[in-house]
Amino acid sequence: MHRVLSGIAPSGNFTLGNFLGALRHWVSFQDGHDAFYCVVDLHALTSDIDPAAVRANTLDAALNLLAIGLDPERCTLFVQSHVPEHTRLTWLLECTATMGELRRMTQFKDKGQGQEAVRVGLFTYPCLMAADILLYDASAVPVGDDQRQHLELTREVAVRFNNRYGETFTVPEAAIAGTGARVMDLQHPERKMSKSVDSPLGTIGLLDSDEEITRKVRKAVTDTDGEMRYDRAAKPGLANLLDLLAAATDRSPNEVAAGYERYGDLKNDVAAALCDLLRPVRERRARLESDLPYVHAVLSRGAAQAHEVASATYARAADAIGLLPAPPAT
Ligand code: TRP
Image (tube, rainbow, N blue to C red; front, side, top):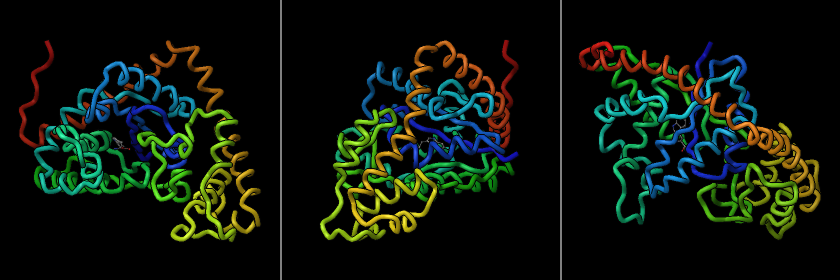
């Protein structure tokens, strides 16, 4: 069975963009794959840290992942920092990747820009992400479109390590979603819908009520020529709405466009489809909140399962690079 691994940072409220861009594919990869999913809490430490928020957001992320339909009987769900091999392998990969490679990462350039004191961890973040992936011999990594470059770096580092020290890592492929991979902000359709950007009307939260969803879709920015056609460059607002309905109903955006004449009618159907999509998530989430011991038990079992795989890979990598085997624990 093919192994898949993916991770999401616990940086607060998940959005519809996270869901359509990556998370719903996590759910479908549970069938027919050996799936590992990880709340990457260490990745949340690369900018200003509020310890209480890190703690709360990590649990919140786990709740959301179970609420969208991850099933601990069919996948391994765990918290990154619970498996110490992630940081241990990161060091070996930091000694494999180069400054030049990391400097080219657009996410680093974007996030580091304008910051006075950029943390080393923000710079080396892609090595930690590569460790997340390589520890599990993942052959596919379902991620949003914005993670392409990090995936490419992971592949390069894996190949280099294998060439220098002997076959150690599986070289992974990205599994980027088609329609819905890039959900744009409803108010600023030229930029990605993001939980880290302050755009309350432009962002649909994973847990938004039907009323909130409907209000935001109704207010979504379109254009004034009134022509119903899918054109991302010329008509980004409308294209985003068509993409959303296409993703929610498994059709192509052109197909969706053919069914409408008026923006208002399209918006009504987008709102209804999104409400139907997110309602069950909200309901599952409410049930999980009333059973936190269950959630902690899932994470604890997940950590044990993940550790079993990760420790074997780490031992292989450490041996390949010339570290003496650790003496048995006393
Ligand atoms: N960097 C990813 C993001 O910002 C999150 C991530 C961390 C990840 N480790 C990963 C994704 C491993 C896939 C696999 O979305």
